[in-house]
Length: 489
View 1: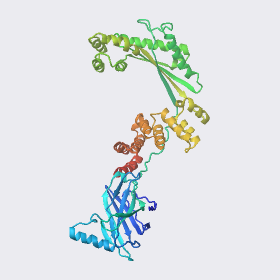
View 2 (view 1 turned 90 degrees about the vertical axis):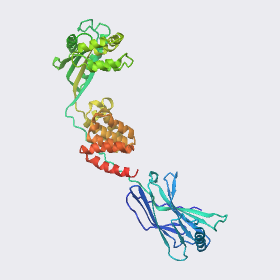
View 3 (view 1 turned 135 degrees about the vertical axis):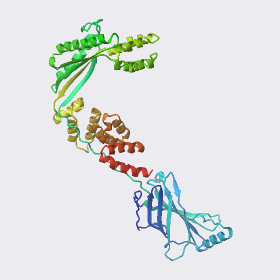
View 4 (view 1 turned 90 degrees about the horizontal axis):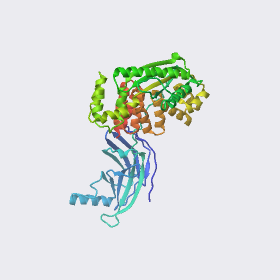
C-alpha cells in the first residue's frame, strides 16, 4: 500500500517558510516543516506528531525524512527517528546495556510510543547543500518491523510527500529593456566597389576594347545607374580612389594611380551623365597594406614570414622595401608576388554616396522585404509597431533590424532580447559579440544577461561589472540577481 499526499510549496533560498498546516502519514502528522538554505548548508526542521499513532508492543517504526531529486535519479536519506512499541523499546535498551550497541544507534532519536497521549518529536538536521537538491522534494518514509532478528523483517513501508517542496532555488529576474532606435535625420547610404581595368604598358588611358575592359565598365555603369534611376535615392557624391602595386618606383606609381583615377572619373562621368561636380578623385600610390593582405592569402609562399616582416617594417623608403623583397632567394619569391599578388592591387575603388527619401508605413513594409538597408531604424520599428508587440511579426521585424544594422546598439540589444525570449541564447551572444557596438553599456548589459542564461557565470559577472562601471543601472540590478544565482551553485 502506498499513499502520497501532493502538497505544493515554494521556499526561496536563504528564507524561512514555516506553517502549521498538517499532512498525514497513516497515523503520523508532519507539521511546522521548514527548509532554510544558508550559504552552503541546508537546515531541515519539522515536528512529527505521534499522538494518533498506534504501534504494537513488539513493533518498531523508522520514520525516514528523504530528499528526492526532481528527476528521481538520486535521493538522500536523513537520519531517521525510531518509534518503538513498549516491548521493543525494552529490548533495544537491554541490548545496548549488554553489548554497548543496538540496531537503532544510527537514529536521530529513539522514542517509546506512549499510547493515548499527546507526543511530538522536534526534528532538526543540517546538511551540506548540493546542486541536485534544487527543486527536489522531501518525503517521509515509514518502515515498520516486527520481532527482533525474526525472518519477517520489514513488515510494511509507506511514504508521504511532506507539505513543501524541499528547496526551490532563486529564480533570477534579469532586466534588459527595449532600447529606443537611434534617430537618423538624413538617411545617407553608400555602396563601395572596386574595378580593375587593363591598361596598355605605361598608359593610363581607358580602352574599352582592350581585353575584358568593356564588361567591367558596363558593371560600373550599371551600379551607378541603379542608384541614379531609383526615384527614392539622390546621388550626393561619387568618390574615386586610385591604387597601384609596388612594381616600379614610388614616384612613378603615385603618378600612375593619380592619372588612372582621374581618367576613370572622366570616362564614367561622360558615360553616366552624372553631374561633374559630384565626382571626387584621390589616389594613394602603392598599396602596401593591400599587399600584406594578398600575401597572407598565399600561405605556401616561400619565406612568407620574411616577406611579411619586410612589409611591416616598411615605413619610409618603399623603393628600398621592394628591393629587399627582390633580393630574397630564390628569385621565384618575387616572381610570384609580381605575377599573383601585385595584379589585384592595381585598381580604382569607387563609392557611390546617396540620400534616401523618407518612407510611409506602406512603403516601408515593401522596402523591408527587398532593401531593408534603405530604411532607418525608426522606419523599421514603425513597421514592427504596426503589427503589435505581442505578434510574431513584431519580433521578426526586430531580428531583421538586427541583421540589417549589426553595429547599432538598439538593433542588436532588441534583437538579442528576441533570441533570448526564444531560448536561442547562443544566437543572442553571437549577435552582440560580433557587433562594433559590443562595448556600449546597453549591449554589455544584454550580453552579460545572455552569458548568465547560458550558465557562463564568470563571463556574465565580468561583463555586467563593465556595464555597471559604464553607468548602466540595469546591469547593477542584474549583478545582484547573478550573485544570488551563484550562491546556489
